[in-house]
Length: 408
Image (cartoon, rainbow, N blue to C red; front, side):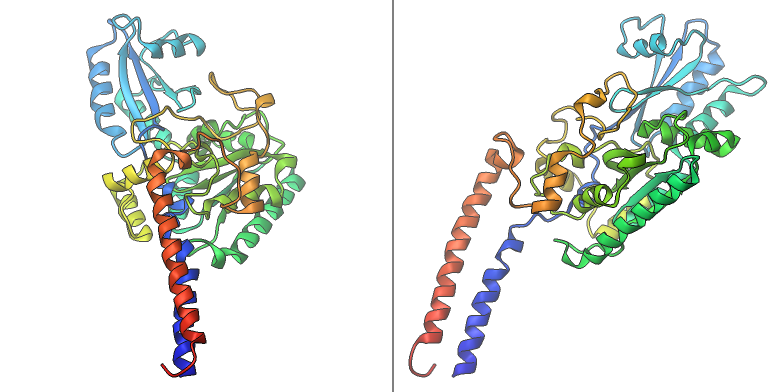
């Protein structure tokens, strides 16, 4: 019967069309951003001397032992007179620290910041606890954490003092969000909610607000935002586990095209052939507790803390857990840090990010040493070729059945 023949042909063609999705990555870039491979830690160094009072030493030890448990920050107490070869002593010199106790926060790419832990007429443990709270949390970071769990990502706008520039930046952000939202139905994997904008005051205005300003100082520092650059707005795109992707956009760099180019990457298949160092960018210093973790697992449909998931994502990004060193922060024009590269070595928009939005995830050129060319992917390529061959046979049989004279 003609109807049955058509049904057979349709089934064969449907199977053939479904083939690419069978070999797509299980995850999109957004999902991989929730997996912490343990190579992006911040370090909190507490410095003491032999003559540091015992109650202060014990306060350091007791507070730090549990304070950073649910965070991406590792703490260590250093006796500067007993550990004279410790590599973290270099921060005392670069930051001109001469009084103790003292504390320094160091980002994965080597930026360092003094964390005040001593205040006149205030118990040390109280000062230390407040300082740690400011390191781990702030109103803007809390909002970011709540949004990235449920949404495509967050476009963080740090406003300048120029109202006209702020409005132009907001317009670019909203236009980019609309562009992404209009194409979310075509993503390799569905994402329920589009990106959202989170805005904070300009650095001078923010830091003038005593309580909130002190807490947001860590956020500005982690993004490489110069507090003296108050006029121009800045934008960073955040996704996954408070992970920063792409450049730190400033002023004239804030355009719909630039923002859309980075946002597109978040929704791509994780096997997209961009350089995964751009995907695994710097995480903000945050507290990621069990409640957030449970909410994330429920939203994603898998537990990003699972050792199996971590191993799988580690292979995808081309570095197993405990493998190669941290690649550094995203491009940030004017980035300040002991290990940051100069602006001359950076493009405003990485070429590979441009390629993704222009040609998709199948046509981009890649280095011969790209992780996708390593031995681990050869069996997948072989399996793909075999399956393509078998599918072609099925299609041919289906066509033959359709064209065969006589009844079925």
